[in-house]
Amino acid sequence: MKRIIPLFLALALLASCSKDKPETLTTPMPTTKLEKLSFENYKVQTTKDKYGFHVFYEEDIDGTRYDVWASGNEGAALANSRRNPEKFPTFASPDGYEGYCACMNTQATGTFGNLIGKPIAAGSLFLGNFNMDKAMTDELKTTEFGIPVDRQPRKVVGWYKYIPGKVYTNKKRKEIKDQIDSASVTGVFWRNENPSGKKIVLYGDDYNTNPYVVSRGRIADIPISEDWARFEMVFEGDEADPEILAEWGYSFTVLFSSSRNGGDFEGAVGSTFMVDEVEVVF
Image (cartoon, rainbow, N blue to C red; front, side, top):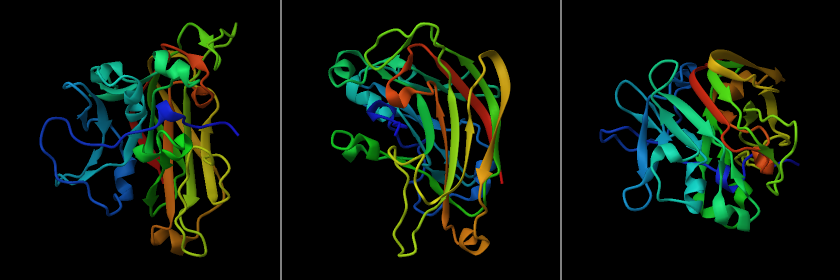
């Protein structure tokens, strides 16, 4: 079973850019907010000595904030917390298709990462939560995928740029000749409660195999593009029960990564994946 998101791909919680915002609500975000994801809303999560990383969120017109995005930054801070936001694997870039965009890049994790057998960290962003309490004990449980929805996703479309790094390496940082890195876009839609009433959350170890998955989408290969290009990911699978769906009985996530095999600690340092103006079609 391939690891979807290791320790350094694990992810963060979300906020605002410069103004004080209201506290995050526990009620589900309206599914309609997923119809247009522009990555304009973010803030700096402070680490040490006034350094920090960017965290994304969604916001209603009344100022209600929904912390639905997570990224690899909080895990990456374990390796090096004293750096500016643009030096982390995932950050808000002003060079978007329109305004700001999410920029992800694959990085070397340095001495700390090499010591624990995780020499690279692919930039990543997904709908869900990062559970920092699990970071040092059960890294595949740090990534808690998904948010509740009351409509079934059919496809995810948006704009991207992708430039792979020059040297592709394996988990031991050995170069793999003629291998070119690729970004990744995947999505999953699943039943979020079993017949006994137990909540079903997807983690890094069952993202691809959980039996409650109803449909999924994947772009097998992201073409290299220095200019903004359109992507489209179509979901395939079964139909949701409309009565259960109306009661928020399903969850959905979309996951972006700058290195498709980053979960196996393979990829090319320097691979850069920019994503903007994403739309979920229901």
